[in-house]
Picture (cartoon, rainbow, N blue to C red):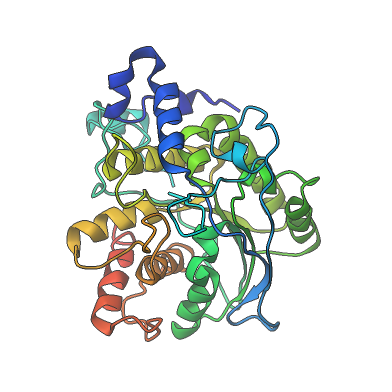
Length: 357
């Protein structure tokens, strides 16, 4: 597989570091953020409208062996993500192609990853997201795989409630663990990697959402994320399903010298590129956060730690995931997750905006 597409410039901030820009950017971000999933809760099981009980949760102490060349945050936990000492005992996770040909992108002043010639990213640009083939039908089986960005506020359950309220009940399950990367999930010798392997080889799935550790999605997209996603996508296709990458969001305040817009630009470009390479669906959660900030600045999308989503942020992600796989607007959904009705309606509108493109 040609990985050169992931070697393009990532943001204008990289220019400040010359030839060592990518490495400097990666190291500074990792040192400043401890990006990735936090909390030690692990969950494997069903959510919402499935026929089984709630997912079992366990806790796990992070280990601290040699990183083996992984990012600095991962060295704190043996490939898992480090804890943020300022987050009250939680670790912090700051844890689809655009559809244009190269010629079309160039004519619009943008590359295939949606970036402009100066490396910036227009979060309001039209994203020609790949449509599911087929779209979700009756009682689809859906699996969420990720870390604390997924199990915070129980995103799988929120998604299940949204789909049920819209007349599309689903069998929703999850495999989630704090600190985890998709590289770990793709490793069948890893404890949860083995659990996921069994699910993908022993069961049928219509859609599988993959949520990467944000540090790997930012700084190690080519080295770590792409091989892991490619491996998992092959297994998902073998299970009869479609892969959907869930793009996470920048930390609320950005990282070190990097603004939230700069961090999110890199995440967006990398996820667009990888989804294009493997031909997967893309749920552009981080782009939705940026649009919502501009359209409705009064809505708080981040939790108190500034890394993980608030309930409103998770609800936005759930509505967006619904729009992507069902190809239907979530506007008018009666389920609001106890969020103020007016705020929920605004979040629904932001998610629906991606369908109009």
